[in-house]
Length: 175
Figure 1 (tube, helix red, strand yellow):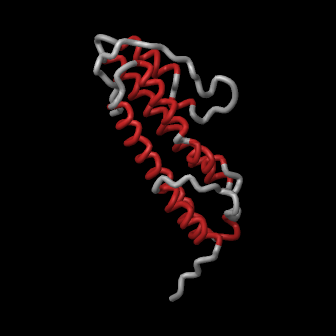
Figure 2 (cartoon, helix red, strand yellow):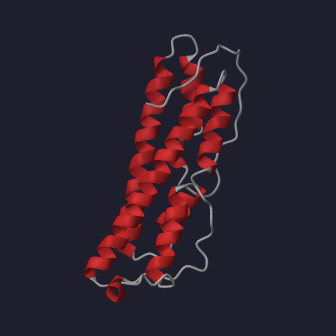
Figure 3 (tube, one colour):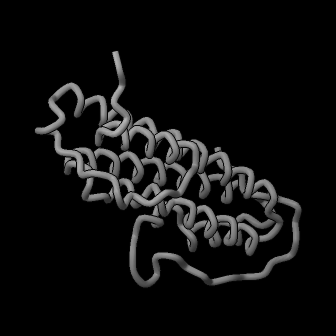
């Protein structure tokens, strides 16, 4: 049996593998995927591959965010870490909104991304609130640069307000 490597499905599989590993390759040049042309089983397998790739990418994103937050000392550091985390979501957002995917798949991927970011935001807020000394400032920082709003576009989508604070040696931990 010979695997044909230049089929639309195979090209997507290569891209999804790289995406899951953290690559930021553009979607341009990939073919549109039509479930009618793929057939039921192949369309389901493709949707599963997309979902798995997104989940792996988000796992890596969560891990990096945790490492970044472990290094924070002030609310300003927290804001900067959250802004960097939001920027790292650009490619995931591009995948979930791509017109190259069939609508049902786009919706499922968008819902998964949104749910993951909502859960991350809730964990960040709980963790910030738990800090006794500087919890209020940390909570304000976490709420001003919300990771669950990384999917929004336009004014206010990526807040840049900054505040200074005394270095406390504490960091917000993502659970």
